[in-house]
Length: 340
Ligand code: NCD
Ligand code: ZN
Ligand code: ZN
Image (tube, rainbow, N blue to C red; front, side, top):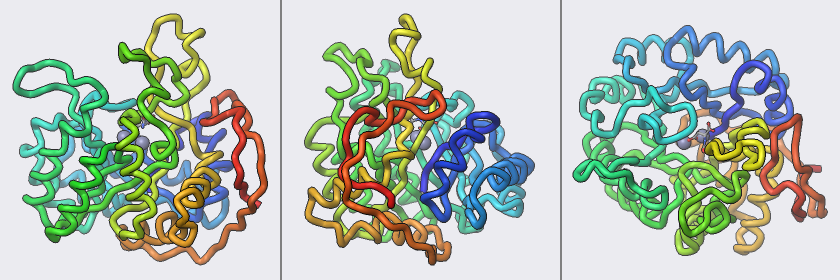
């Protein structure tokens, strides 16, 4: 329920191969899909390169110019999701609406609610709004929770997905809001259950392993454990959203970057399913995998369940380092499951 195919040559490289294991997906166009025409164009681009029968659930991005009219036109053009990456919090998000301006966009959220559109949010706050100081990456998701609670309680009928959740506080928040009758859910990636902050950064907060670097950044071990528990919980509000985010090797190589910051985003598509299976197996919960992976997401989105099946086998393989110049998450490591 959360993937990045990009556009142009990158899409041509990753889409056929990424879409093969999925009957459908929610591709996020980051900033380049913001209105109805973009939805039509991007959908066409995806369908040209995906396998036959692939069903993209289209989204538009909440940006400063977004109006209720744009939301409605985009819905009529096929968009089912309004994606909100608050300004500057992640890759290609500089035109995103600031959390502080959330209330100005209430007419937009009201329109989404009346259309039954899903609002998918990258919940991170970069600035401490009282002091104006930058919040360290480790605490940004937690700092955004107050905005999530406000939006969910002001719009109890609005379907809101907290995307790629990373903290025990966020796991708890989704559970509480759901318990209160809010229409909320969370997506969980395949990488956050296997990473902690020390796999990404040194003690001074410098990224030492760009391959493990995505936003929100992996947190502490207690958070990782909470995410794993949520993943295998069998609760319908926790479902899969892999956030596979390909970046060319230049942006992931400290050597080539010579001091420039690496780009956030993990290209996980080639390992997502084996990696999830490893987590479910280690948690003794393989019987919960199918609901998490293929059922709860489509149910929340209100789309038909896939009638296709995918065969996996327990057989060790070594993950290649790269695919068409895009470094692959866990490249060089062994995984114990594979797609047959
Ligand atoms: C994503 C990307 O590269 O587009 N990056 C990331 O670190 N997760 C954007 C996003 O989902 O925030
Ligand atoms: Zn995001
Ligand atoms: Zn993403």
